[in-house]
Amino acid sequence: MSVPPPLPLARTTQPTYIIGHKNPDADAICSALAYAAFKEASGQSGFKPARCGNSNARIDAILHRFGATLPEFVGDVIPRIEDIMHRDPFKVSVDDTCARALELLDLHDVRALPVVGTDGRLEGYVSIFSLGDYFIPKPKRATAMRKVTSSINAIIRSIGGVEVVSYDATSVDELYVRVAAMELESFGKSATVEGIPNNKSVIVVGDRSDVHLRAIEMGVRIIIVTGGHRMKADVLERAKAAKVSVAYADTDSATTAWAVRASTLVGGLVQRDAFTFKPQEKLSVARRRIVQNPALICNVVDEDGHLLGVFTKTDIINPPRAKLVLVDHNELSQAVDGAAEVEITEVVDHHRLGNAPTHQPILFINRPLGSTCSIVADMFRTADLKPTPQIAGLMMCGIISDTLLLQSPTTTPLDADLLQWLSRLADADARSLADMIFNAGSVLSTLSPAAAVRADCKLYTEGERRFSVSQVEELGFTNFWKCEDALLEALEQYRMENGLSFSCLLVTDIDTQSSLFLIRGDAEVVQAITYPQKRPPDIFDLPGIVSRKKQLMPYLGSLLGSTNESA
Image 1 (cartoon, rainbow, N blue to C red):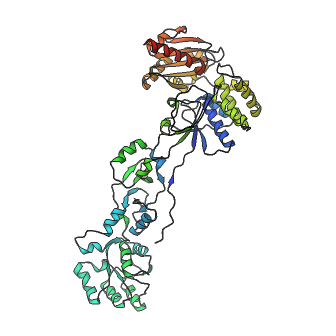
Image 2: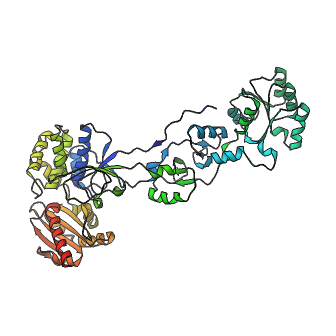
Image 3: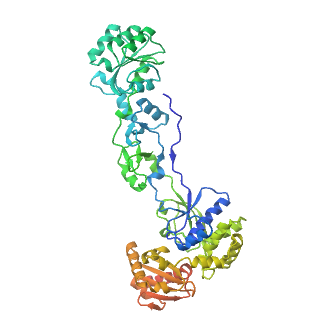
């Protein structure tokens, strides 16, 4: 039987994700979209913008204004079985013959094949070892070497023969192959001695009409005439009258007899102890399961048991890893879950260095600008590439949002220059965009206190202290004073859930360029805060403070340094 040429087993291929931080803000989303566009414009392929958190009203307004699509959500990049499995694997069905299984094993140089039922569900597997046990048994009776569980159709397929006449050809029976290589008298006696029923006999014979006739008289299941010979016409008519199936084979009798045995259906040899995994199972968990298991092949199935793919122990040793470009952050605590387990190829950021470790040198762009979109815009301009009006508009929004329309202390002259350049390309007015962005909905009035605390939250580590700093930007503090107690409770809950030393929230009034600061946790840190209390003991007034990165974080760093020294 012919087998199609080998095809490469298909693995999942992943793009390089350009992705911002958890709880993304406008700059994180817009810079991911813009940097992906820059990659494409500069002739680099395989990059895809992504996000690891939910959108918000401001982001939605920006994307709607410029007709852009929210980047794909990537909840984590933790290596999983689906990342290493070979899809559409070589397999056999329960109705395939051993001959088919052997050819596939040899052609593709594998030691085992999954076996599926007619519905595609995994039944088990067949291996070179189970097939070896079948073809070279340790029989207690000679009939074990002759036994074949098959059908007439399967036998003819296996021998590569020609069907002349057949009866009940699809019925699967326990048959016994016999080679007529003896005198006619001995041929008739051998079946009786071995206790083989005539109607279960598969006779393999050359051009011996006497044996043909005797086999027809005995009522055997099928006569296979070998060596390219043919049954005489009158004998064939007698076979038809007796309803004895007849087939021709070009191979010699010994080869044909072996091929008949190879027509046994795989379903009868299936090993049911298949080693199975779900596609979403983590590789770290799978490795522990595999260590002590001698399985030749690992099968991946869905919830209903349908075969999705396979992998081997070799695949799991050196799995393909997802690749990331981090934008608007460089700390693993803020990155998509699993970032430490994959390859980070680039970082484009404007924040403090947070020591994201890599296994090899990477492109690391960290510039003291007001937004990551400013960095990407400057890359476009330096490369003499013009972004589309859509991408230019998105970068404008990233700059406006992060610099509070160039009013934040993080703003640089280059930010202002780039905003003007982008404004011409996008044919958009910066002031109008700012009004749209900052009027796109109050976080405090549209989200629950718990969601507001998590909406733009970043985790940091200073010495032995881990803490979170959230920020919301409002037009006035009216909405804040309606929910300050609930916000404090939400901060405490978040701190407890994440095992943090303290959690804080910066509520910024865009109009007055000032903020209120809420903190829950480490009493020593709270007591060390030097700003005036707005409402004792955990709400402080921070006039002129609007930037988490440029103003609040340096202050907290100094504060924590002094408390560590005093300790």
